[in-house]
Image (cartoon, rainbow, N blue to C red; front, side, top):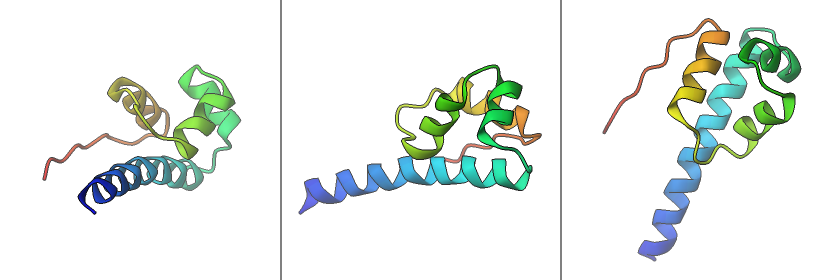
Length: 77
């Protein structure tokens, strides 16, 4: 079913972003609360990014990346 496939792919991309953010946070040895303080937001916002990564602003991802000491790279394929 093409509609199902599109929905699945979109959901997978959203999940992948959240997983990548969580992995980077854990590798940095930070809790969600510690990362939230570095980013200037609340722990619940970090949790939403990691668990429900949909419609994330690029600027938000950039702020999180900077707080983790990472560079943001975007690829189109």
